[in-house]
Length: 119
Image 1 (tube, rainbow, N blue to C red):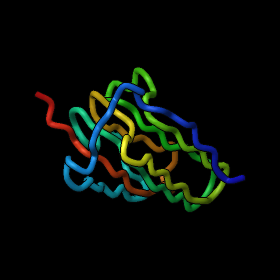
Image 2 (image 1 turned 45 degrees about the vertical axis):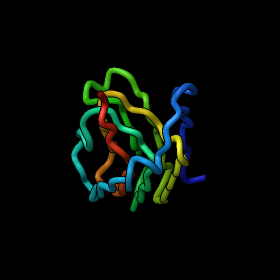
Image 3 (image 1 turned 90 degrees about the vertical axis):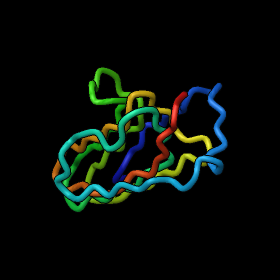
Image 4 (image 1 turned 120 degrees about the vertical axis):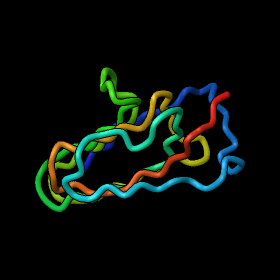
């Protein structure tokens, strides 16, 4: 088995009509991308797709830049491979922004998300 994904469920009380929020944003992350904020603010992560061209590695998604707590999904690669996750219409709620970090420079991919306009 080349990959293991740690499951994560959003707050069960979160109910969002994703279709009413407009199209999802897509941000591509090339191989060797630096860890950092992809989107600021209140974000709904809808999915991601990763490709690892060589070696063992990990991609982590955090709620905000502080990285104090891993609140998004992690994907582990034992060797080269790919992983795609789609979280459906509910997504994963990230209240402080979408932060992505990869442990090795051979991982590339994309994240799909919606930034909420909080009142």
